[in-house]
Each structure stands twice: as structure tokens, then as C-alpha cells.
Image (tube, rainbow, N blue to C red):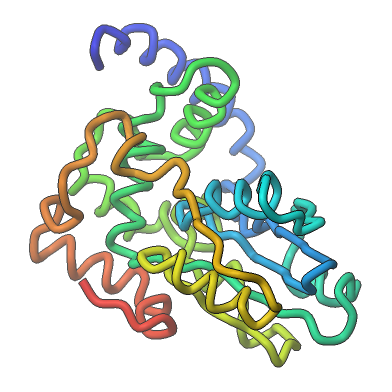
Length: 251
């Protein structure tokens, strides 16, 4: 990896030793706690799903120089936040979702092949994700990653949040909220503004941050389609069947 592999291999081995010792007590735990963006001012609750424009949403709501959303960032489950009624009885709950096949490509480039791309704490944090799962490696091919993801080690109940099914972050069957909106990453500016217009806000430009095309270790190919063959298309279709059914995606 551009001269970094000897160091990377050593770091990965160190992390694996630590994680294997920790895993003697059991398998990895699932991580479905979303980053919640809360705006009491507009009565908005956003359950941000990893690799679905999370950085864009945080910058838009938390660091917007044009509009003060009076927003804050929480880490909690959607039902817990709703039970606390931070926005009264009629909040608008929303999430941004993404085509599952595209999200898997982004996960592979950013969290697997790009595990050593970030220096310092951020880089070590990503390395720890890879090291925490048997069979996962920064040197694996995309096809091997898909095979791993669709196997026992990649299942949702022990998944890292970057490849956990999207519907797990906004459990629609459990949410007691009459006002829920699902926005799409590929039309995020249009969808977000349509939602904000209902709150009386004028049109806002949404600056995309941390997009895969510009930050995934410089290796992301031109289109998601180039990563896949018939076998991997079908495997991801089966792995994320519930997301595909709920949000109406296709390859």
C-alpha cells in the first residue's frame, strides 16, 4: 500500500491480538446507535446513518453559517430520543438512505482498503474496526469482502455500524411517530429543502462533504457498477433485502 504495508501489517497484528483476547468473552457487539442531530427550534430529529451523507448533514445542521438551527448532536436510539420528547409531541423524524450496493462500495473503500489512509487517532480507529472481525483484512479484494459481509461474521447483530443494514437505525415498526420522512442521498439537496420548506425555511445550498468520489483513498472507481459481477450483485441483494424492500432500491 504505497510503501505503508509493513507498518500497516504490524499495526493490524497488534490490534488483532488485542481484539482476539477481548473476544474470548464473546463475539463483537452490534453498534446500531446512530448519531442523532436534534433541532428543537425546528422540531427535527435526524437519525444519521453511516456512509449516507452523515458528514454533510452534521456540517449543514451544526456548522451552518447562514442558518442557526440551534442543533445538537446525540448518540442514542431513536425510540429513546422520542420518549424524552425533546421537540414536543409532533417532531419530524428523518433519515437519509442510500442504495445498498453503493453503500457497500463506499464501506469497502473507506473502511477496508482505506483503513490506513487517515493519520493519527482517526486512522487507528478505522484499523480497530478491521482488526475486530475474523476474516476481515485490508488486503482483501472487493469480492472477498462481499463474501465475508454476507457470511456469519458480517451479520447485523454483531455488525459495525458502517455495514449494518440501514433500517436498523430507524426501526419504523418500533417508532411511535406519525411524521417520518426518508430522504435519499442521491437527491439530498432537493429532498432536504422540500422537508425544510414545510418548516418555513428558504432554499439552502447543501455542500456535500466526505463524498466517496473524492476521499476514498483516491481509488474509488467511476461507477458502483464496475465493482460488481452477477454473483456479488445477488449476494448484496440478499444481504440487504429488507433495506431494498423498504426503500425501493435496485442495482
